[in-house]
Amino acid sequence: MSGETQVTAYLLHSRRYRDSSLIVDLFCRELGRVSCVARGALRPKSSLPVRHPFQALSVAFQGRGELPTLVRAEALQVPVALSGQRLYCGFYLNELLLKLTVRHDAHPSLFDVYAESLNSLADNSPLEPVLRRFEVRLLEELGLGLTLDHDHEGQPLYADQMYTYSIDAGPAPVTGVHTDALRGDTLLGLRSGEFANDAALREARTLMRKVIDYHLDGKPLHSRTLFR
Image (cartoon, rainbow, N blue to C red):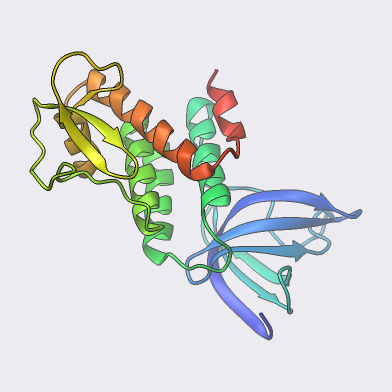
């Protein structure tokens, strides 16, 4: 990456670098996830507003290699105000982007979904549907989407049918007692983003945790510990 590049971004994470600088991980609409050095960002008179997550920024960086230098940053809005559990949910979204996306792989639609999800967290929308919708769209964008419209044999899903879910093969109808079975309306709810009841939300949460853990390949999600 050479020359100067200007993009719209959100700060996902930052860590101290030397005495007064930060290494910042940005999620950019035009470029995907980018890490760069914000030199002097910790100085009192710094013009780089990169200390607050959940804030849309216009940023410019330049330099070669994996760690360009952030040269300008301008806030496009005040940070989305999150507190309590909603703040933890915001950290969870950020960590999913950090752990599952690839650097310099642009996903403009996912960027928009992320911005919408932050606003939904801030306006007191029910938390669980917001998280499930984001997880489903994230996996779709990364080419890891769930099969949510037919079973492993290509048959339509039925709301009152019980299914097991294989990450490789998708849903399979079952009868009798299966400890990991879930109703078809849970899968249909994940597809539509609307859930019929609390039982469907619980099943959706369990399934999505299983799927995300599989794709994380052993990498822990530290934000989950905040919900305990």
